[in-house]
Image (cartoon, rainbow, N blue to C red; front, side, top):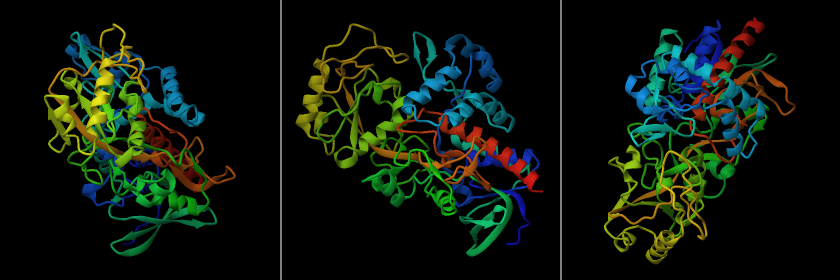
Length: 497
């Protein structure tokens, strides 16, 4: 394989990588993309996402710039509310315990809406997240949690749109071509060593953008950095995010940044495959727990299911499941809230039990102590509650009192059979540790100096996420920092010329 030297090589082919490639090209650089996976399994975790897209907006007029086909029925029956920069800052700060890098956070938030407009210009379509982030109460949908905007068709359509634009821009992708090492010279990073069709090849470039994700698909690295038993976790997305990009950068002196012992992990079907299945996508997830209870092998609750909307707790509660005996739990519901559960609870490949009595259900929950479970149900139902109405669209204050772990909201009694339970374990989405970068996505060394010619975008950047995660931030960050990385790398190349 003989390839002329390119201005920019992008390692990866997901959302952040493709945004970086398109941005570099529109700023005058010649671009080549490298993808470890075959074409039918390409695009990293981006292809698996449900499509939540967290951006600043101030009402329908803003959203209409992204979703011009909002119809009159939606206008009359949907309250999108607003999601201001101040709310965004508060959510990121609160969820990360105020550890998120302030500069990167400011860039993410202040450039979110404009990046959405830019991605729309690249063919990405958006829609209202009805049924995922808003419930119909009294004939009207009300959005909560800042997530009115979703990508139409989820991750598959996102990547189909971006790669269609990439093809029109004549940016080639070399599939099944894993990057092995960064090439260095007197001027800094000067290309990538790859394996292509069994051959080791050195591809020359004036700049390299690493946008190939974290190490969530590498069991050895999960155990080393995340801790005991994390090698046993299921992987929600691609099996190809093995941390190779991180290793390549660290090998040449890049500084690590962010929460290396942290990750985004959710409650995931107990019998899901070890890695993601593109035909199922994100539907092995089980995010309806705020409207029921979650019990472990002892039959005991171990989280406050109603602490907040699932968008603000789902990414940390997977870790709580991993801390339980046997690394599993069961989510339990009665008939009053089953209509609120999303389509992920109705797929064919689902670990589910159903019974007309609690005693019958207790005998069906594999691995769970029946007595402990029945004691938990009785205690939960008997706990005092305020006389307030149940409302899934707000923090309704319907809470228990006096339990070892009280449920803060949506704590209806479980008293309407038949009852249903869903078996879950942890599914890891992506890892929080990454590379230290400048505000312009230049990868930095331990002294804080930029490594010439090396840039990063997407989940490989460290410093945005600690402890927890706000749903929809990952795709947004991929777009924001992918666009910046492409623009910055193109400017660097012009200077190098």
